[in-house]
Length: 368
Image (tube, one colour):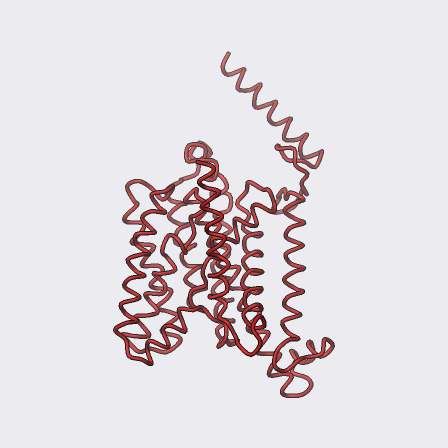
């Protein structure tokens, strides 16, 4: 009797799935765009519209940013200047601005993706590398290179990556018995991050005046001295990490429904959580190595994207686009909000993100 009931349920479910696909709606009744081919997928129309709107906003801000500055470019001269044609001064400013804009987009996308990963594996809206402490770990590695070893930019970037990965190993060891999920992961991360923040402050206090100024400038998070070499390096590394991230999309989508459901679907929950942890830390470490710490983007971008799309999925694409928009927009605010002064992008995101963190804590309190 139970076997026939299971067969009947499976038949009804299969029929419902086919009916949903034919009608262009998912099982929740939301309209979706069905993509068929080697990689089949159903994309909710609201998510698709949001992503298109984000791309349009990013393109508009990027083009506007190319025109503005001490030397203003005419719209029709932007593309020739990027191709190396026209006055040398126009070519120089166009190349500098383009490198800065592309770096802002890549850093924002990396932070948005990292935040989306951590919010899934922790099951908490406050689960981001800023809160859990991985950003502080990357900063520790960079500060050791700046202050202790007196190293150059390449060594500082490598130190940030190594520091972030080392912090992830420490957090994993401290949460290995109970698992990488829930408030325990957040609380352990907060403890580790607070300890590292205190250690970072001690390093800066004990440094020489020149080293302290260099460290303070790096800790503010800035795109002021970005170059095409650093931008290309970040782009190449992100292209290597992206295929690894794509392998985690389906398992993380199952984990989002709970460990028991994911295990029932054949997902090795602990293994994928650990893999997602290290990939998320690698993303935030690469971003931090490029610009220094940029606060709250990883926390806010996935949550804002999820709220606007009203989607229960992982939403990596929306989170990446939202993060890119936030960093680019914050950089433009820092460049032009105060005439004659440039405010570091990390300062702008910190000011805006602090208010958003209060809002998130308020929402979490209402849920509880």
